[in-house]
Amino acid sequence: VSSAVEIRFQSTLQKDEVLPAFFVLFGSQFPKVKSNDIPGPIRKRPEFTFSSDFLLSNKDFSIGVSNRSVLFENVGEYKLWNKYFDLIIQSLEKIRSGNFVTSMERVGLRYISIFDTNEPIEKCLNLNFQIGFPDFAQRTDLVRLTLKKDEVSVLLNIGHNATATLSNA
Image (cartoon, rainbow, N blue to C red; front, side):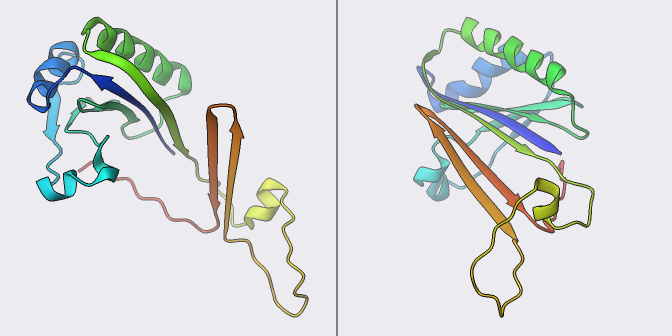
């Protein structure tokens, strides 16, 4: 199981101010600091706009930070939502007290769960997806569903026989 909550925002921070601004808020709670060394030419690509510059961590959680985003993740075994949500709320209060966030752009949640079964996903989720080719065997390997309501989008991906690895390197 893995989960991440990402908050994207506009801020007054320059790149060289990120670590000092966040470390003063979180250094005692998240004493381990690691730089996210993405090479300059790659970092300039649009898909890296919101990637973390630094990772602050302890034995339970990590917080990825930049001048455009903050990313909360579980480390190791999943902590139940009550503990995780409390961390997020308390951390957002600290960030708000830093007075460098000027506006919020997006809140995203990524959650990965593994079903401990050898059953096909159709049986686990009560799905019946068939295409009219009776001479062909069918198996649903991936289900992707997008749900939208007003400004909220939910993207659900479900894979059959997916493999998950955990690396705290």
